[in-house]
Length: 376
Image (cartoon, rainbow, N blue to C red; front, side, top):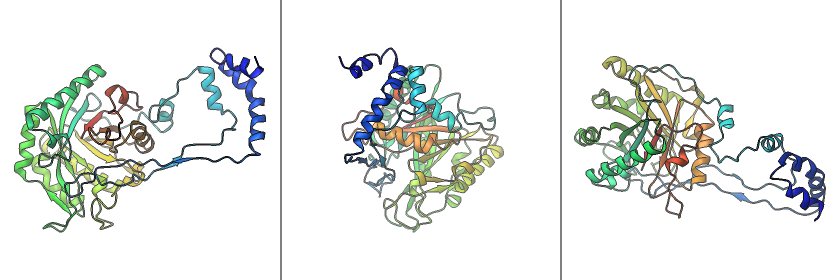
């Protein structure tokens, strides 16, 4: 047995000793490797989305992040590696490491919410979509009774996976749908009728669920669109979601041709509007979800204002393989703390390349654990 084989045989019992004793051997190997040409490989991380734009579904565009996946293999052991060997720590997937979360400021401090707040006392599990389209999500893909049955089944899965946290079912309705054509308004968006919104609100009540009004502004302004929904948002069980991807007022590019963005100032406007509704109608706090899956999807996140009357959920909205979704969660949700976190699962797009749909047990490994789960 060579000395290296002998030292390697000690690794399970004496990991730190192995690192120290193999260090000279590693250095020698590195010296030799410097004499040869080493090629590194780059992995392009692409979080794709559905192709339809006229129905408000996600465009088939890159999500705008890539990184090198390989490095030259003659680096010295880092202090973190040595500490890990000492403690026998496990290797975390992206988005799971509690030390990384703590280094970014989690758990996030926020104003004490008003009485009746849903978060973090409960976890919200929502079905997303629009009943006029089977392609926009589970809310419209299935007939009402079948849809509510499936939602209930997902709620049960989460109750079993995390019995300590009650589950609040929800329907997340796209009430303003981005369009690929300007339409009568010239704003590249279509506002759903009050009758349709009330219909879905009735479904939510039937299921003991809350309702989210989701807005895709297209070329319109959130400051113009949002006040049109006071009539429904004044109810205590109706909440708000906004989608930066389809906010393209500044660029004037058609929805689906470019990924849009919201600045903290836009989010603060919407949050303040909700605060005023809560005070005006004496409501419990509103839950406010902001979809995000790119760096520029939300700018100046550190300037987002937190309020007693509003509970902000930064929601990881990208689709793809589990590793890609975890990377997005880490890079755009964990790395820029706001208040609470959410995570979207796509029944079709997450699995279209043979990957399995992430389970509640997978998401419960994330740090921080998402308290808003959305199925599309």
